[in-house]
Image (cartoon, rainbow, N blue to C red; front, side, top):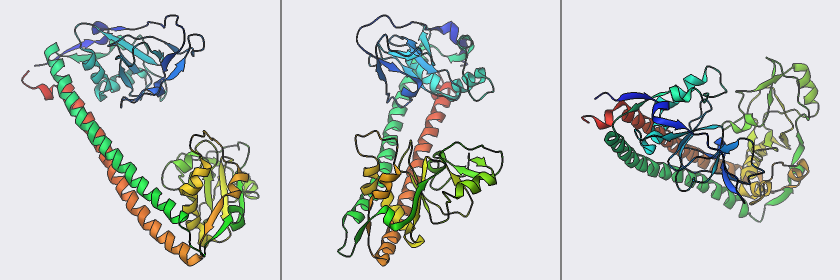
Length: 391
């Protein structure tokens, strides 16, 4: 049986309800606060202090989705979300009698719907679908008994997928915790022949990058910022900005990164540690600190100390919302220093454990990716009619 395709405007009302005057506070959901896992993060607002975009007030069984191109965020208003305010970055639909709210909610999450939405949004990277275009979207609308069957099948499938994802995430977190626990144990259980030194005592220089935004050029010397230290296991030279050779040479008079040095982020996402293991010339921004060990022989050991809980807990104390690591504090951190032979033994053991941990992380991340693809495949089959053949 071929399902009828109907325009959204024929089976739904586009909701424009605004929040009524209220006392006290209400939950406000931005597009950032919603995700398809169902774990939401609203903020509290009053009627008078709410942002200008906090201006949609849906009802139970309304279905909302992010209008922005390339953004798949969908919610179904239930008891938990009822009475909350939503950003105008969402489009809100109120299903009529021909379509079940849960069926619509699941359909909008599918690639089928998201591709149509993005096509209406145009070719640009930014932007989103216009409210006037939403009623024009055509969707498959099977008879209500088929909709109920699809919802039942998908609810059961998604519950199993959710449990499998939670297991994979738990295993992923456990593998990371085992490594971090071992890191902490290594540096807490110091031997009698260990010394303790301030970081500045075992380094020739601890400084940061240039304090002003340079003039970028289309080709030249890479200019490393925080995003180049958070995008992968090493220093990433993808999506990098470039500066002129002349500016690079000027910046190097103060800060010259070299192989065997250590970089650590000091603004925003603080405490990310990377060893310079390349001979590519580059300069760094003020948001990145440069650590030059007295000897390159201690670089790997020093990296492990810096990523261990004994240092990371000082950089990012629990309960504190620190967004800046000061050089004066970084220089004073106490570093446990065993004899060089012991350092090499520790590094070898941690290298092996790190390799095994990364293998496990790769397996679990692949598992999570496979489960997400399976969900997409199930959705596609559902709205192609493959899950309800014969009906």
